[in-house]
Length: 546
Ligand code: NAP
Image 1 (cartoon, rainbow, N blue to C red):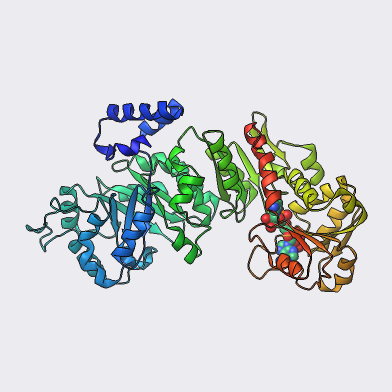
Image 2: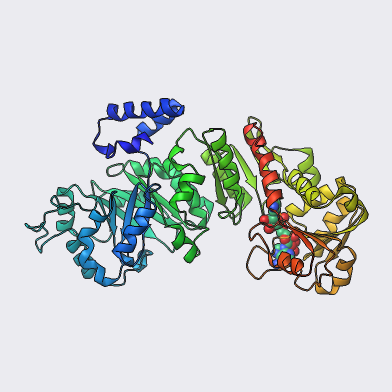
């Protein structure tokens, strides 16, 4: 993007910046409002945390992600000790601005030494002598140095701070609350603002979407303190939106980790890598005018839906973004959506039924299914739809023919929101010999009664009954998403069964693996996801995805 070409933009006059962006505007046909939004402040920089054990490996990592990251953070707390004596030379190895950080364990880092040791690492890195001055022989101006130093709120060393200030090294004054959410964000910012000229960074665990909402509610208050430059982060899975939508928090920097670390540490639900942020979420285009859509559920941060929806916006050059929102309840998800002016939501487990009572209208199909997977904000309020029905019907008919369905038995496993959509389709396509098997029998009874199907408890003792309906098995429970889960672990496949599992991640559940091994024809839920997302895209944007 052109505004990156004029780095360091901080040093430019506002009108220079403006003209550069107008060039970009004409090139890319994006709306002017986007540029006025950018003029409010600087665009959020994407930072990749470098967490390798050696400087060389970190330099390789920076090279790998140089196209997606604007700046890098050297996390010296991850380094082998013998690397410390070479820290000063690291900025010369990297072609972009760098943050220097030595994070203590208590703040979520790896550094276990004393505060004195930490101070010495900073002194060594920034060439300070005992008086807090730069060494005569190696002044910071003579060598390329770090652009920022991250100092926690309790790490106060006045000589270091004045030396950094004199060398134009910016200080990020940070606070990390990894155990408990930050109670009073504005007060915390006020306390940090005693460090004038510093960028205020507040990172706290979000234990709910409500905690993340507090960041968005307090952005303007926090900006009033200090330099007005802020970084706000909600950590954990409920804080994911604070990273993707960090431009709306006016955050200076959004922190990312490399894919390799995210996978190795199993951080997929709470962290994002710079490639996903830039390519899937089109981060550099997010601004105050971006229309936001979301995916509301209990565990949605690794869903494929953001890929499907955001690719559609990219294809049609729409200024929209689709973000996963893990929530504790449908209610807090809707409150968050309201706060951010979210235009539409996909709704998934376990909120497809509980969301209904908060809606002002619901489509006939969704009403029939008793489940809503799509919510659209309209002038009249929130409207509910069900596109799982469309997605399931289309993908099911690619797997079995209508004639087959009408002449065979079918077992529907589960009685939640997704199973309700499946029941609607089975009924519509004329399946007669259907039984609902669910762990909680009462729920199976209630679902089956609405459609005239049989109902059974899902248990080993009912294996012979399941066999009776097993020509087609539709697995619509949420069991199977985690390793080792198989709701039909007790069942022996004969090899003639056709097994459709709505789960698509993992792409082959334990159940599908077992069925395939026995010779059964199998199908996962990816095509269903795709088709229901296409329909949802149409409802959200008025344009046909396909
Ligand atoms: P939901 O409303 O929360 O219902 C969950 C269902 O799973 C309930 O019937 C529950 O039984 C059952 N269940 C949970 N854990 C179980 C276990 N350990 N053993 C047996 N049964 C168990 O969820 P949902 O919205 O219906 O979604 C269900 C699944 O479908 C999810 O995995 C979701 O990802 C998938 N899905 C896929 C698509 C797609 O496009 N491919 C679309 C929608 C849903 P109880 O009643 O006993 O609690």
